[in-house]
Image (cartoon, rainbow, N blue to C red):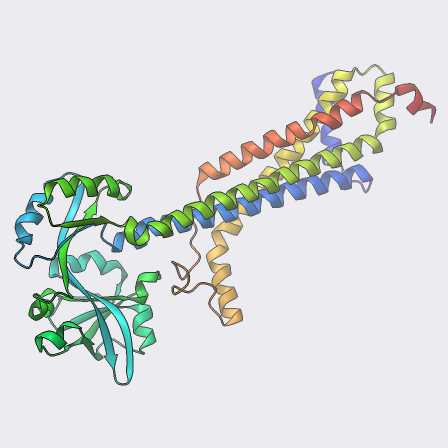
Length: 401
């Protein structure tokens, strides 16, 4: 039997426009494969989005490596110049931080108060609204969720109370809200930034931590860089990296991504099993045709090839539809989530529970290529049993009945 005839028979059985059982089963197998691939690719893209936003949004705002010391006489400028010579470190900035209470009227909430200088404002500029033309000593940048919790608007005055003032007799810090930082991450819940000079009266307080924040070229080299920096600084300095504060979160995202990928990959196996079931029923439905082809001279290899081609066609059509549908679903996933939130009038993701307040998406062609290859391979392998079953049908008994 020529290959063209084998292909035509397999194509007719796969895309049969009729209303017979074989046509229905082929359509069911194709739809099952397409849905499995589309769902897998959509969820993979969303999990990739969480991974990307974790690296580029959250980790871009927090120090990759921190060097702190309780010694108030530390020459931070000298140490900063020394560390800045390392090619793996892109930026070194001084900071002071302390836990504080933010007060406005009768409202009080806790915040993590940190300092930045004029040179560091640009680090947050892409997420700050309105844009800051200058950074004053009485200015304040507040996380969007924290500002919303206190119903603050740009220009409002607020008061910070530090535990240090009870021991040093210092006045509370009074600043006005200069800008709101809306990163749509969990950092918006606690982030509060003020000028370096604002913290100078509290420099000798034991409740205030001073140090250097290092931004690295490779964020995932933080552990290695932490040990490298620890060998460069004098004893008594405390060196930590971002994995101490956000490492568990990143590991949880990676674990969730792997587990969901594994679970959804099983869905493709189920879809492949659906191909086996469909082709077995096609063999039963077309047993008379198979017997007649054999009686007309078709060999067992011809019958096996026809069903192999049919399995491959089901996989190809299912993969093509699944990839297109998956790309569309992944692309519009953030809009669909936002529309659902608006319809329900309830946020699906909140930063006090989840690391992000939106559904991120990162569509990667590698995932599409790998998923398509696996689905195609499973579709072809799934046709082995039906093909062998079709080739072994008893011709005489089938024609007799």
